[in-house]
Image (tube, rainbow, N blue to C red):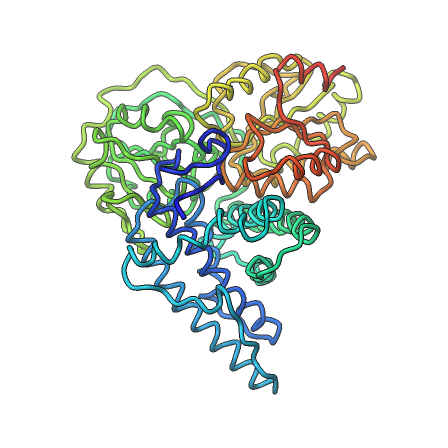
Length: 550
């Protein structure tokens, strides 16, 4: 079978990428990722059963999240690194099998003889692994189970990938929860079965949403305990004279370590993309050489990075194929990788990045100071909740719009800019994730001191949005669906899928999503979501505002 991938919003022709991914991955990369997912299911078959007998292994738990994360869109494009992950997966499976069998013997039970992913043995060499992986992907599932069941399987799988990314970020800061790993293994064991049931998978998709809520809560605790609760902060978006390093991705720990290693080196550190919200964290913003933000969302990096006169560090997903103009000065770390790009290993010694920055020109002079404001996490917003509630009761704030999610390169994503511009002046906009770059440069003013645009943070800070919504609902003695609150969501990759499943698991209805519905949802599944949750594809800004506000 040839390559087939439909996990992101920009999948070719709205159906699936078959020759090369829109993201840039080729058939080799895509097939190795399919095989890695298959291998992780095998690990989980044993891990789930071992846990039921009271046995777990931390390395197996951590690897499960890492492997899922590595297969998210725009993370690992390097076949050699994927091969290494597959070899490690085979080792993990053998160790987990022994752990399970030992637990059975101690409990006086006969171990099950497991098949499918649990029996996988890796071939030798990348070419042979690719051949192994050809019948382990999306097309094989569709042939085996039919479209509806296969798509539901993938809805759950993609949600797990997103939750795994957040779990990996939390683990990097020392925050883990074994009940989270237990749920990963339970659901992956379910997905490993030869027979799948549509009703069970639909229920499991909502369980995946609940899992992701727990993971986002864990990550919020990790970030805020380590770096403080974000506070409203003006962030410079124009250059400062001096040598420079640009940090993109999502990982707060990588940024913190780089700030520590560059302190006193006369190098200024800038953020890019989803790292913008990090300027609101007290511990991070205390670094005087943490000077500002450069550029916009991940999808513009090939246009923007050539103009940055320093070194560039990609910390997690969101990398695009580096252009020749900056190939020698871009670096990766963690799970993100591109063939030929220098990778900073797990020891996080950023000396190669620092040396590159020192050997590059940097900015020759300061430019006029321009800023945008970030830092409206749940603690910051709740500190003024009383005033917000009073303004709502007085009729001065009549509606809240959560306009956020992933950005992308499709022209119809300009819908989100137009929508934000047309939101009535008596409304407040909450935003998060890189979708904010469609409009966060605009001036929205305030309502009696409450900014009309509140940047809540990264995509994982959907947790903050949920906490804010829940607090407002409690104040007005209703549920979230009873609030004058509308969700206008843009999605791109699997973390957005996880967040959507979380919102659905909380019973939140009337979500508008775009710019297109997922290719992995058949018409039958779309009808289910419409009937049960009233999910609505976006139309035009005018039509949607009229429908929302009457």
